[in-house]
Length: 84
Image 1 (spheres, rainbow, N blue to C red):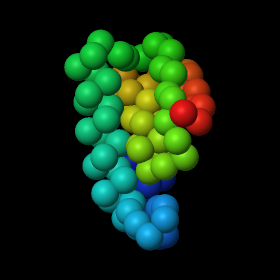
Image 2 (image 1 turned 135 degrees about the horizontal axis):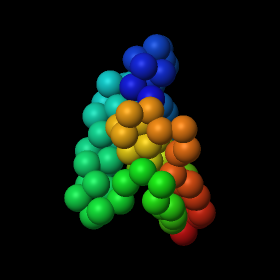
Image 3 (image 1 turned 90 degrees about the horizontal axis):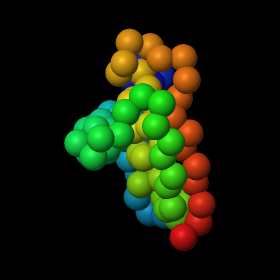
């Protein structure tokens, strides 16, 4: 979760774009907030259909944040990725 991102020293690189760990964490938190507003929470199955991109990583981390925001849930929502 957030602690793992804080320990990262390398930024996420995609194409000519680089994303710092703190920015990736911020984007994932925004996505998690959006998921919560849609009623998605702990134990829900989330299917993602995104190309390999920073948005995919952000959405997967958002799923992880949702599971950890409920007091350290032991099961993470299934985040399935597929190329669009």
